[in-house]
Amino acid sequence: MKPKKWRTLIEVGFIVFLFYTNLLMGEFERSGQGLRKGIVWALSDIFTKSNLAIAAIGAVVGYALIELLRSKIPD
Image (cartoon, rainbow, N blue to C red; front, side, top):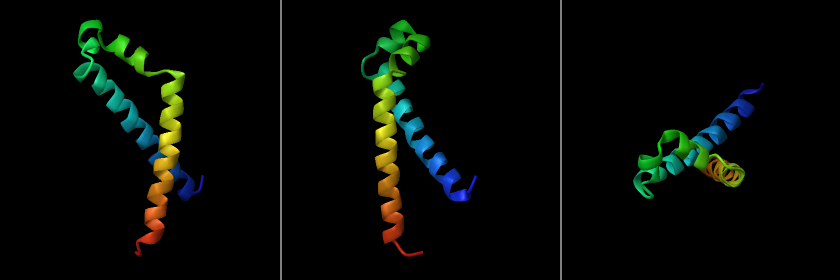
């Protein structure tokens, strides 16, 4: 795989990771249900099709914005 594709895959994956980490933190801090029901419940609650769609769209948009900024800022 070319280095550009690897970088794209890593950056999009990192954005998705941050999205899911934020959701998991919310289950324990904001709603508090994660504390009562446990980590397995919290993980099953955040890994849904709709959250995956939101994460994927957000990651692609975020990556596009990062690339736009990279092209505007000279090396």
